[in-house]
Image (tube, rainbow, N blue to C red; front, side, top):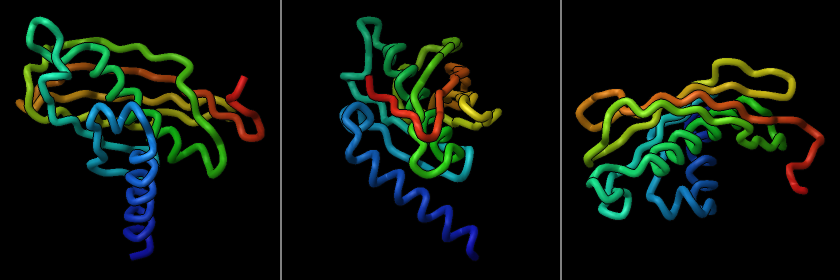
Amino acid sequence: MKRKKRVQNLAAEIRRRLKDSGAPQHLGFSLESARKGRVVMRLDVRPHHKQIHGVVHGGIVATLADTAAGIAAATVAGPGTPVATVELKINYLEAIEGGRVRAEARVLRKGRHFIVVECDVWSEQGKLAAKALLTFGAARGHTLAF
């Protein structure tokens, strides 16, 4: 029962923080589920997500993957440890025409200063639309401000 309560608290905290986050809020990203090292986010595609060929813009897909992966990294970084994307590599495999898009992120490795996360982005039809590999800097006691 304690584990279920921790997962519920984690999800509630992530949802609270997403409300204060500009880009994810503006783009309509929402949290589907979260647990330590794993996050699933979704996007219900709207016309403003699409590029001139009528499919979801690659930048939107990358932002969704980055957001889900960043939250997954934050769940293992520890309290008060900021995370920031250092590298994002994404392969686009299928065009997304619409519907509900899911981004499933999972931490592959947590090191002392870096966290590596993979994120699969799925179309509503269940097709793997994109695969991303991300590295986040995470260093306690350091600031990300310049």
